[in-house]
Length: 374
Image (cartoon, rainbow, N blue to C red):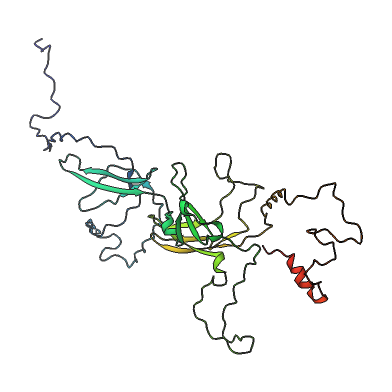
């Protein structure tokens, strides 16, 4: 009858129980990070297949226990050769946290990508979890299009002439006419070949020299050595231009004539049946070339005009004066057998007074008087 209505709870562990040792770590709050501009042009990527780090620590290999395969005294069973692992696809993960074992390393790749042209500098920060030190990596990148030099002083080796000092058309020969500076006009000028013969045939290149070749007399033709492959063109129909890659990347350049333009001056991508001006006159050799950075090569441009030439209309004759006017209607021509009046021109087939009659051998001379050389 003396039972305690509120008994003491039974302890979960015996009274002589000692808990195991535990380790606690005190982590201090890191310093506040400085505000940095966001990184938009550079990205950190981690390959899924990591290369072997040559200086990594090798974990100790456990020794096999007695009685297991490979242990001393085991049956002479040969160990199986290691099977080659199939190569895995190396994916790029956008990880920003890595668990690196002691003495090991992780390879990361920094990729630069920009939709804009220019020079960019950004900073990547790395730190250990719970650490106080931040390592900053400065990243610089440049983005640009492949370009070639459009400076007319470099492209055209011919004589440069200002538009205000432009000579007459018949005196121009392989000259670059510098245009007047116009804000809305980007073309610095134009190159003019000068007057060229129309419908002049394009000469064929000579056959390459081969040993044993003979001339028309049967004499052997000696080796001419290096020959200019464009020496068969007339000097007036050929021009050499300098094409320079002044960009940062290798560039593949194709040369063609400008297509027809629309009302706004934009080049038509599909001209259709519209003719391309000068397509039968100008040719490029070569039509395409590959230039390394800061490389310069020569472009040959030939011009052979073809087609019917439209001559300008002849000027109208000036009106004759009153002294040279036709005779009045009242004046009658002389009758047959009468001598013409003084000052009248001789009739057809008659010789003027004081001028000998043309003989049979003088036909060419008389005909030559009526020939006009233009």
